[in-house]
Image 1 (tube, one colour):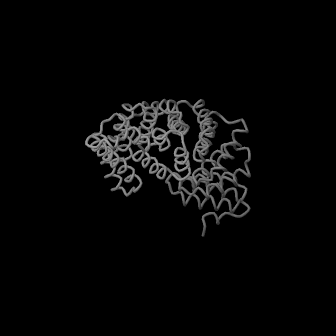
Image 2 (cartoon, one colour):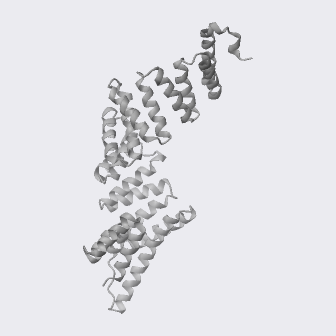
Image 3 (cartoon, one colour):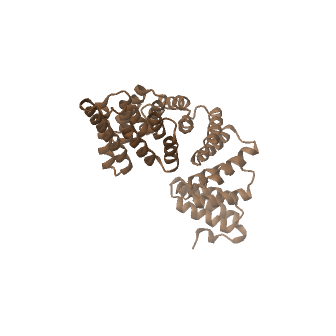
Length: 348
């Protein structure tokens, strides 16, 4: 017999109070499934018991069942449409299941109501910014992160997220500023490896090779298996004409990426290794055979990192440049790189 069945149906309020107490006890003991069963029994007694929907929603969240949590939150909002925080909570669940448009709609609705306190307003902006970022709408994401940081400048996580958005928009100076703020706040956090790596890439894009090498080195110190950092640092060494250090890093990157089963990373590292070797061979042969001129190393690196630039430096702004631009932008980076390298090594 169910514990609540001993109560007369006319005295359901007493049964509901009893079930609430049992549910709260189970929540304290982190027995979320049992708490859900008690809330379900309450709703069987009284389907309009709004608080039971909200409490059960929170229990579903603890179990990671966002679909059921959304259902209960929706029922709660039908009974309590003025509960603005509920829309923001549902937006977070929609984001977790990647229903990003619905999450944006909930955040926008909550913000349009205009009666949120500072914490919930900041949360709504941050959630909506996350969704815009996942949808590659970087300008909209940037605007919302700006609002979120304005309302809660102490929330360091938002600086990291905005830094990633700035990098996507090629606002490298702004990205470095945000990422530096994050790293200064907690420089020993093991989760900040990606932060260092992103800042290194921004320095690389700005031509700050020494700063890039320092950040790539910090990534490697924290995670010696992070092969992308070796590729990045190897590329920086190439620009500084430190061929020995570049070769060492690229060989390590090839070994690590192969061990991790990342074919693309392995091929990228091996391509750069082979190009360094090819360049050396070409230079050596030019000493004994003046028929072939040495290939400019900068042209090779440009062909790898941004193929259209390598083509432009080699043959100028002609038909090959436009062919390469189409290959790179429409058919991924690899066909563009192959075409660019072919031109670099075969153009006289």
